[in-house]
Image (cartoon, rainbow, N blue to C red; front, side):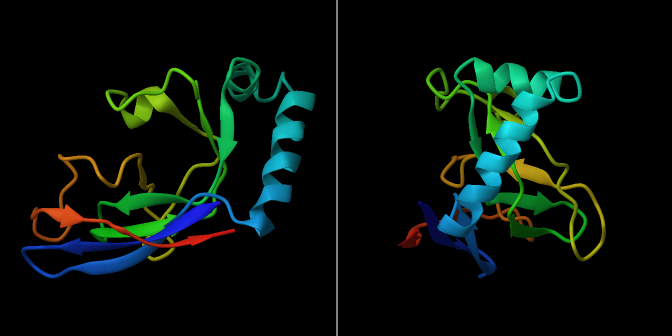
Length: 140
């Protein structure tokens, strides 16, 4: 199950709708990818390690393109390194292992995964203002 969120900057009015989490159409791909990782441990040693040690596979994350100054959602596979030990204090780098590198469809720049859209330090990419990202809709 996933969510649609509307990210809005209180200062400049920047607004974008993004989705987070897997939909039913992505579930089969996630399971296929997980099995491929586990079947080919030599090729994907780090990903296999996390999946065998309480890691969970996910998709449809929100990313930030620093060059375009835009939030974007992408249907890319990522692995939460330790699902049960994850806490609010974790950074993106500590908690997530990107199985695929995220590149901006507009400029080709590698993008940064946004772990928590409700983090207090997350700012508007356009002006640096405070943003809000409430859930608009849940989907399957």
